[in-house]
Length: 579
Picture 1 (tube, rainbow, N blue to C red):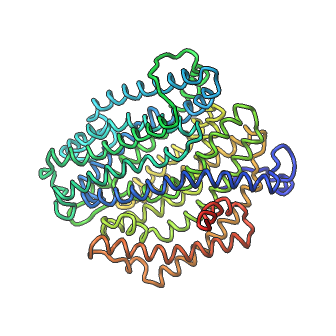
Picture 2 (tube, rainbow, N blue to C red; picture 1 turned 120 degrees about the horizontal axis):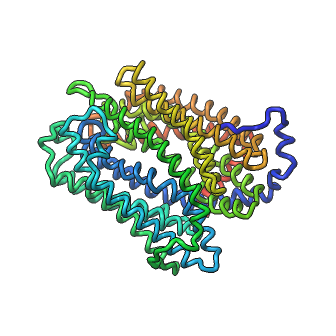
Picture 3 (cartoon, rainbow, N blue to C red; picture 1 turned 180 degrees about the horizontal axis):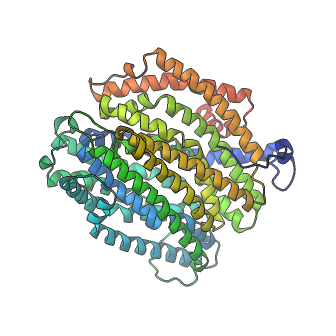
């Protein structure tokens, strides 16, 4: 990513003096080491949950496919709780709850304040969940376009079973943020493993009882009956229930007790009211763009015929799953490890500490996301074959181009996530909202342009590109806003220099990986039609061979370019291997 800097200033001078001067080498190494240790604990949990999630997804695709009527209907229904949670609760919880919990634990009546915060939030989310479940039919119609009456009916039944996930997503977030505020970072990242275990068992039963996508004509909705619906959608919801409730175990073992208390007095929400309002508006606007993207993708998928398949909602979701893996494994772990400290520093007025932690996070994240972008672009085909081997050759060929388009937005995604949390640490929701306006306009404009000027088979690929473009606009605008908020400086010289070096190294590494990929046969070397195990193995060896070459070239060049932030990622991992 790029950083906003004063072009008239000398970067070296900018980094050498003043209130935002970088740490001494010893302090910098200590901060990086601490960040690495906290991040690796969370990354390990995330890696375990993501690995289970890949198995879960593999079995889901085996059951209902990655394209087609049923796949798209279930994808929209199962996505609705996530979208609704982002609109109605997710943004406000992250913007309001975390800073208020940090304050509550430092107050004289800490238990009472935390109890009230949790109770009010839980009751509110439960009420919203009940209303939206009752209106499932209208919600499904809002998010789709071009569907038949039968497909809408199936999507609505799926939604009745899936929307209750909204409450348990909220409960998972509430309990997880209490754990994070108590600096118990691991359980929040490990909890999704419970979801994966339940889902794998449920989808396994589905395959054993009803067979998979290869055994059934999933476009014939007359063959889809109530037991199939209940087992598929009920399994998905039961997994989220397990993910939320398992967090009660570490909380209870640590001595924390949540007593149900209603009341608004004395919990600090009055000061948080403005940021909640702006955050809600920003999330609604952001999800309006997602809604339009979903409608465009649903229309493209609905245009598929018996002889020709187009990428639709399910294809986009599969590409998004792979695209978000690097972000969730590393970026979220680093950002979460930093956020509590940034929030405390912001409340104490320690601008230098906020600036230094933000700079450290952006540089450390950048080392990883730049390489991950190159890897996803070069190896989109074999990665899809490895991660979603049950998709088959046809669907893999539809998913891979969408993944490439999305990948160009991975670098700004890491930066914009951490930056948004800094705004929330200062309880500034207004800036987040106004920055969301141009990014959402860019997303919708890209989708409209695709509908006007591109054939329908390219609409979902264009959706991935429009999403990436909106990420770049967001991160550039947030960079400028934070520069003003943090006293006119954002350690821009070091951030920009780091990303320039990593982009150069990743470009060379990507060229080496692409050359090897073509040498071994490219997409044609992947084994399709001989079972999903062989497909996975072919994707694995191609990804591993080319990926290791890329990684070796990348690390070597970063060493030659003296990129110290590499140690923040590799140091804790290498230390554990040595032990």
